[in-house]
Image (tube, rainbow, N blue to C red; front, side, top):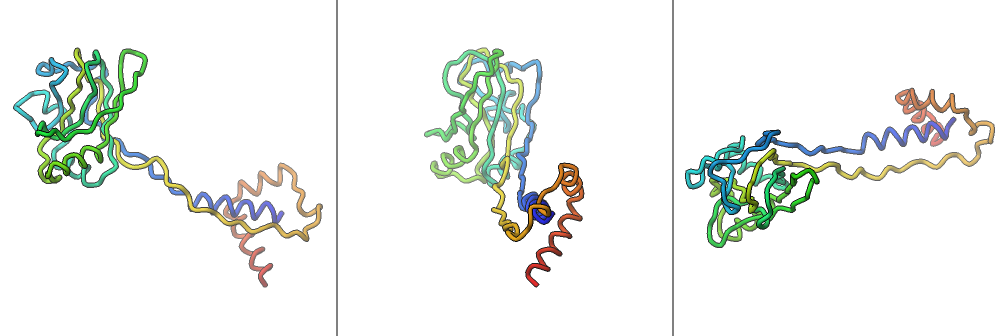
Length: 214
């Protein structure tokens, strides 16, 4: 019984110390049918937010520039889009078309249904931006240059946060080697009851440990 109580205590401690930080997704564009923008006709054209060059396609993302700045400041974010088209180069994520252009290249995955998923790093873009002598306060746009002809956008989102944070190691007390076979053997029913009553097991285990130390 003591062995099972010790195991139960270890499981509870592991659950308490294991911290999950789920990724947060900010959907900034969604059209299941796909959308081809009227002023995004060449592979080198662009879409985004901020109204760069007065383009209509530069104002299609559901996010403000202040929110973009906050995401860039926080770090660790990724821009993810699903699209279709004909490859003419590598898509880029940028804040504007300065010279030299500060950008982050997308990594593109073929989804096998005529669509592609592309992912770009905000951190990479910010590093290139700052290398050009700019600051986050200078950001006035968020733009995607698809470099695909016949481009249609289905979805775009900004993902922040990590999937998981590694749990701290859990130390468990070695079972008492003086226990007899009779006291250490438990039936499946006994085990199920103990695991089902975890809070009681924790309290009992604490008593057992206290008695040992006494």
